[in-house]
Image 1: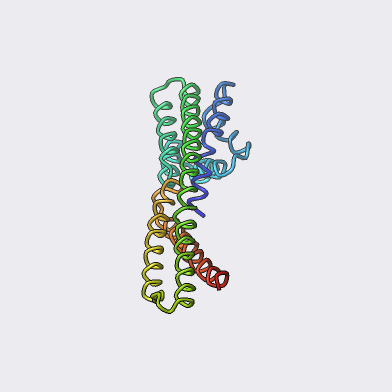
Image 2: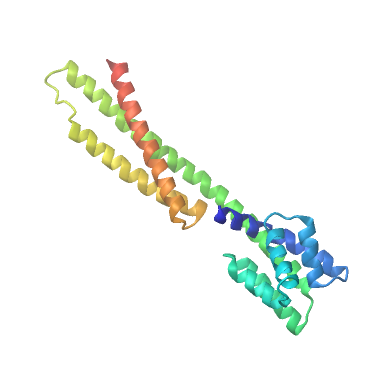
Length: 222
């Protein structure tokens, strides 16, 4: 839940920066620009900016202290960078609106590039998912089921032993599990919980496909 909120927060920071830029260009102060973001209701960002205003009004902290406290409490490198830019601008002067506008444009471009890369990566991974967790287990199940039926029809043919099926399941489980781990990294990053879930889903799908085809093949050829 927290990771999802942080992802949405980072994605909406450029929108908040554009709102701040419009406010600053109209002659308002930084604090007034932050209040404008809160009134705009930008998801997740409005909550964080409300905390800054609350620290200033209720705890009587300075803007700089409130910004540092809130930015350090969040797992967002982007927001910490924004906070540093605003604080340094208030200390040393400069065109904050232009700086925030350039930062917002850069973040927008990075998000678009990331989306394009994820789309291309997802297409490639989808093909790998179908092959490694679908086609290969299904082929193994088809061969196993066919050989089982042939051994029953021709007594001279060696039968498929349980140890061979177990070995096939072990191989499928290991291959699909490793693929699941690598599959999760481009989509979710190095997040262990999501990697484990993806690994379990891939293994379950692959083994289920193997068993289903193995049984169905036996019934069809029988």
